[in-house]
Image: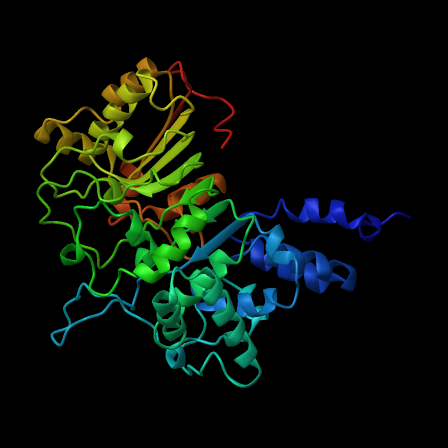
Length: 430
């Protein structure tokens, strides 16, 4: 009688690729424990389509180094992290806008790669041993070789080498990203922006050292990573956790980040805070000065009443032919529809549903809108991001409902429209 284990390896890998939700790593671990024939299948999926918490980055890289050639198979990478309990505070306990560099001796070791598949939570932090100890000396040497090859100059190389001791998270992220020549999709939507300082190279030029967290700008890392990633990334989920970043007093800056350097980007997910900080006085930026013209899907989280102004400019640009490939825009609002409508009316902004729907009909763009009952959390350890939760049918779990009474009186508002303004029946193809 034919069995599942009789199928060719290629077909088994195709079947395993359908495990793509928040329980993926646990399911692959269970598959590896089912039978010895499935172990290499699960292991290849974990290594070639990685999704892990940044705490385990050194364990993942250590394991990947034992399988030469696997790095060329990696086309997408997901890294999760959180700002909870990690922000720098001053002597009074007030958050300080500073980069929390992690020294090598303070980095969590975990329990090797087997722990990676258990959950998305960080490793136990009770005993932080040194990463590069005993047999891992060769691992550090390999990291130094990669840094020597990709560093822009001798000084950048020495800074990268020093970061392997004094700023190990940033150093290892840099080594990993430049070592994946086929990488096309980078998923950081459930991550803290502070953990990826190379994005300082995409900041608006008007934002100087004065306005960013102290020590966050890593020019030596930016010079190595952005020229390597920008020409080939097609999918980017920009970190949505912007804690310890503050751009309140910038008066003349319309956009915080500029993504036009990613010349092949077709799908971009970004927080509204990265496009326009809520308390900035100027109107939201012109999308043509922020987004690449190759964009097909734009997903914006943490939307507010100001988002309608940005989408209005986006639709006008689409009608002028400046975003010829744009097909779908997804908007995930932070607050309830009633609250956003009230703020929009009070501030003289377009209606977040009626006016926005008309904008997208005129521009012949597909539109997805979501308003929570109370407040939509950006991410949780179980569901990762709102769009992941939506695909798994668990979007309501991200709704931080303060009052149980509100759960009975109100319902979330969700709308999925095609380019003609009609409600979709089959959902989004993305």
